[in-house]
Length: 115
Length: 111
Image (cartoon, rainbow over all chains, first blue to last red):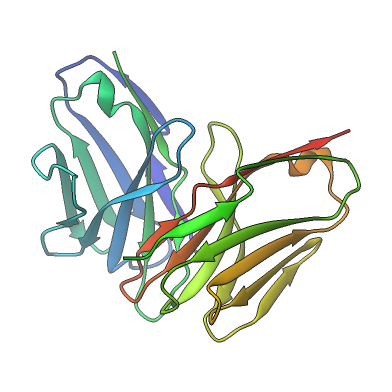
């Protein structure tokens, strides 16, 4: 199967700082990437859809100015949590897709803790 | 709007039992349905993917079925083992490749 690498796997940051999470497709070109968030003991919720070369589409209730998504190349999408607060502490995970293939390939996830 | 529901929310069984996890979805216009396993504090492990044109998929002791008309999928685990203990998530994919996840079933297989 295709490999998606997500980095870092965990991060602890101070309240008010920004954190960048990278999602890379290692052996295929990902035309679309998705970012999900999972709070403790809850399921995964879609945050946004990221298409290469265009602005991300955010789900209802997700602040686009707080969660900046950049998909500058066919192999890399980044999620930046700006001015992070303790309530942003969560598990963030990306998935990548390429044209014509409907299976979702997930990164390993990033556990963000804001203190 | 697609909604995915999983029943039961939690399940505890003795080792060796066969078990069935249920997943239902409200919109039958899906591309596929996927089952994942998630261990505590970890990411997702893909178990089985059923395309919308398929009825079932099998991998080892796992068998997943799909009935689009009734909006249901089941994951059957044969001869359960303590190592099967995890949270099992089903997710329905729509035409834009978005995955809508269920809330999961937390499985505990007791030795």
